[in-house]
Amino acid sequence: MCATVDRSVWYRQGVIAKTSERPESPARRRILDTAAALFYAEGVHAVGIDRIIAEAAVAKATFYHHFPAKDELVRAYLEREFERQRGALEAVRAASGGPREALLAIFDALAANGAAAGFRGCPFTNAAAEYPDPAHPVRRTIAAYRDWNRGLFQELCAGAGDPAPGRTAVLLMMIRDGIVVGSDLDDPGSLGPVVRDAVNRVLSGGETPGAG
Amino acid sequence: MCATVDRSVWYRQGVIAKTSERPESPARRRILDTAAALFYAEGVHAVGIDRIIAEAAVAKATFYHHFPAKDELVRAYLEREFERQRGALEAVRAASGGPREALLAIFDALAANGAAAGFRGCPFTNAAAEYPDPAHPVRRTIAAYRDWNRGLFQELCAGAGDPAPGRTAVLLMMIRDGIVVGSDLDDPGSLGPVVRDAVNRVLSGGETPGAG
DNA sequence: CATCGAGCAGACAGACCTGTCTACTCGCCT
DNA sequence: AGGCGAGTAGACAGGTCTGTCTGCTCGATG
Image (cartoon, rainbow over the protein chains, first blue to last red):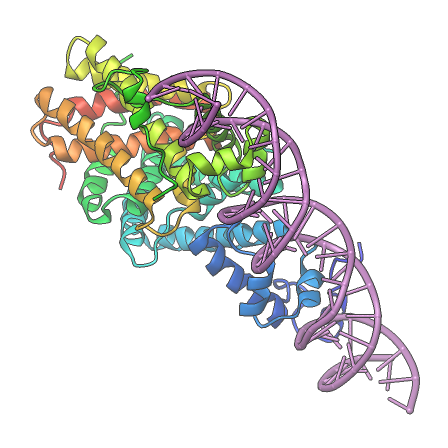
């Protein structure tokens, strides 16, 4: 209870408009930025609170003022990454001519992102490897992310005239997972051209699966 | 140096034939079995040595007699898993009528395995999430496993008459990763039928990718 | 001016981690 | 009989982990 931050004062002093997004103290932001970089690069269990507060230049009490426990920081890290990706993919969708073009652009971006320096796989699947319990809040966040992602694919497939958008979305999720895992563990360069063909083929061949 | 077990005595006393596989002491086997179950179910960093030796009913000195450090145990765990999978897939290949049937059988087995109770994703990708450094021995073992797996796919594709077996093998690896990730994090039941179609389509459509 | 909250600095507790070491038993081989 | 290696039991060191707590400064608000 007392761990929750009362932000009413922010509204009262007019720092932000009442209807806009939540205020974020500089300290909290620094904690989250540092944690995100470290968690992603080195893994969740491998990075301790002490290191985060040291690199974020924040007192320990300040950390525990903003986050009741480390797991909650992990959840916040994934939640913010969720929002970031949602924004990015929605931007791609808005910039594309249609659903089919949006899907192709998304997968191009996935492959390019995987080939970029510092890529270490998907933050969500990496975190899931360290949280075995599906009922854990961290895992629930991961599940929510994946549901959203599959839903977006399904929506775009339906918009592109796919007769079985649900099935195709599952298949696209498989390709997505293959890209992020392969970009991290194999040669990212070998994936690019294959991805293009694969997505093209999946979207074209969606009309009649045929085999039973 | 002194940490390595001198097995010459085993050969001398004829416990095993000189040309057959290495002998394995019961204690070492118990350690490895326990570690494999715990590492897979809960993650590598989350399981400590103390717990392994307790559940394996082994003294700490015995553990450090067989393994110089924890990382070496992790490597041995993955190495053994590598051998296990190699054996399993080679058996499937031998039992199949031809390369194409072998590939279909392998992916059926992957989907079935992912739907089984206790499935927690791929031991290799899960471990990779906890070992960021690609030069680490654990990561090298993971890379070796993936190279072997892709190589097997390529070989089978070539045998099935695929004109671009290298590319198709990369694509099959992506589907493989999609199966293990999706079976762990999403509903495993939704994957089964999609997998069959996907592999069928990949293998049939291999002749002319067409789209550019 | 008084108060209150944000943040800083750092000690501290208690648990857990890896890895080392001592001292002992047991069984096999020479 | 003697030696040696495998294994047991458990103390120990040194470090790290999370989370709590005390005491302080500073700035804004009433």
